[in-house]
Length: 347
View (tube, rainbow, N blue to C red):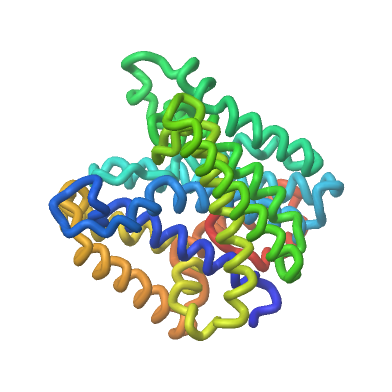
């Protein structure tokens, strides 16, 4: 096992990417004429929330490797790197959105969430958890209060703060939760068990509240409804997946190597699936098929695995992000050589 990377995080990223692919092209019975696979309902909302939580984990690991949040130079270096990555994610997301594939592109929103988190990196974990809780509890209210009528879609970047999918003003809670998780000893079995246990409790507790109270503006569990219950449930699922992945991955690395490979180049894999949908046509999204889903996910797994087996290193887009963000970090600390990050992944 690599001494630098946390293999379980790559596995969790791989699950997030494949889960989003399932949400985009899988026939889960809620849309399309394909044979329904009811379990695919779980792919709506949860994998994208996991992706956002993992963005926060990555930010935290980047800062820790640079020297920690108490080091002003490390903060400046890391903020420059994260801001550069966020800007590139926004740019890539805008290009993908112009392809009109029918996929709700998360990258622009994710870039905004990362930028919103930058001023908060020095806060203690309890404060970050408090702000995350506020985002979960009040995010939908805030988004609906500030969302303009009619013209918000014409603001391709700022409008993502209150967009109908992945509104950054609410979803910032996932990134802040991820920053706290990234401060933990993720290689320790006790930490992994704690994350998995608390995550299961949070997810199950939110589902129980929904069962008891029924659907409502606060208690609804419908994907992308952004109620406190839905966001708490998604956060719990993300914690459980991260904890379980960090425990299982080192023990079953050979079996999970294709999934790990996808997660190690999550941005490239995400963009590749959008390009394939663009080439085939938007009917992959609007007329979903589980055959198409299996083929697309097999292509992503095989491509990423072959890339890693071929010794090609980082994915192509990850390499661009790393090079650009390292250069920005170097400039931010007046040209002092930057420490290299062992967790070189897309946020």
